[in-house]
Image (cartoon, rainbow, N blue to C red):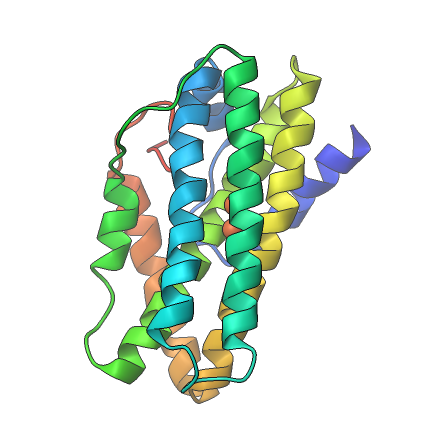
Amino acid sequence: METVTSAFEKIKGLPLHSRTPLEWGEEVLKQPVELLIDHAFLEKKAANNAMELMTRWPDEWLPGWVETMTSVAKDEAAHLAQVTRMLFKRGGRLARGHKSDYANSLRQLVRRGEAPEVLDRLFVSALIELRSCERFAILSVASTKDEELAVFYKGLFASELTHYKVFLKLAYKIAPKPKVDARWYHMLAAEAEILARQEKGPRIHSGM
Ligand SMILES: [Fe+2]
Ligand SMILES: [Fe+2]
């Protein structure tokens, strides 16, 4: 239980502009299977996103770009396998399609033009990782009656925390610090507004 508490402590230091209350976790965990179905799609999309970034800018940006994106894609595919295992074990099935207003709205923040686009796409990736990281920490703490889920969410919290840092670090490598700082602050504020507009329900990025 001590490690779960430390996840809860760690999220206090995250730069998010809004905080998810424990009650959100307690509420969405009333429908754990629906939550896992939504979650599976997020992991799939995270893997797709890393794969797409890898080939979109394969060599002109940074040494290590391809290796980083490949490594993230591999982690996300492993998460997808974990989530689907948990889902099937609990009698659920994957749905055919999935819509996420949260992710779509974040993507609309991406500016056109090569340099702004790559920076913004790194930010959007970092934001999704960051919010997911917070939500998994909340879920690990809220899963009081289900030790298996608590451990599962705790592991994902740690992995998404690493991914968030990876994307943000890349952003700081491709543009001057004051410019990155300003844009990152703007994106964090926009993320909180987008999240606040989301409907409630058993989804990882649902409203509170
Ligand atoms: Fe993931
Ligand atoms: Fe991730």
